[in-house]
Length: 197
Ligand code: CA
Ligand code: CA
Ligand code: CA
Image 1 (cartoon, rainbow, N blue to C red):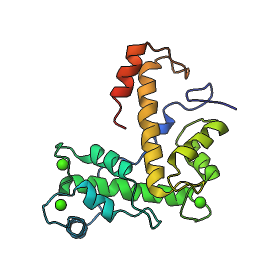
Image 2: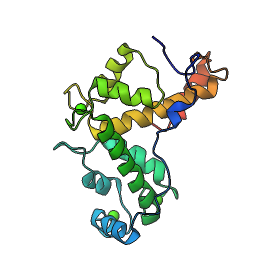
Image 3: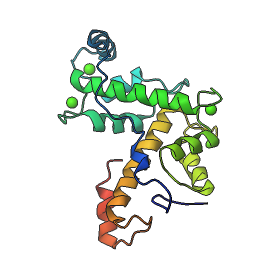
Image 4: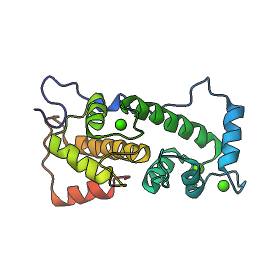
C-alpha cells in the first residue's frame, strides 16, 4: 500500500490533471447562458450573490447546496473581488460546475446520486491521490454532511477543492517530493492562515 504522492513509480503531479478549471468551451451558447444568468440573478442587480448561487445550484437531494462549496467557487471565479459574480465570471463558473457534474456522474458508478467510499477512492485515485483506507473513512466522515455514509455532489466538490488546496500548500514545502515535510511552528501557522479554504 502506498501513501501520499510522489512515491517511487507513481506519477507526480497527476492530481492536477483532472481538476476542471478551464475557460468556457467555445461551443457554449452565450445567449442561452445569459438567460441562465438572468434567472439566477433574482434581484436583477447584474451580479450573482452567494445566496442567489446557493438557491440556483442543486446537489441532487432536497437539501440546500453546501454554503462552503459556494464560498469556495465564488472565491475562485470572483476575478474583480467584488464578492459577487458578474456575467463574465459566471461563464467560467458555469463551465466549472458542469465539468464537475460530469466528473461526479462518471464516478457515481451505481447511479445512486451520491459517491460512496469505493467510488470516492476510484475518483481520487484517478486524480492522482494515494490515500489509505483510514483516511478515506476520515474524508467520508468530514464531507458527508447528511450522515448517510456517502458524499453528495456539493460535498464532493468541496472535498476535491480542499484536498487540492491542502496538497499544493504541502507541496510548496515538500521540495524533494518524498511526501514528508519538516515545518517550524510559525511556518505551520503561516501555511494554515494562507489557505483559501
Ligand atoms: Ca443579484
Ligand atoms: Ca465579481
Ligand atoms: Ca454512488
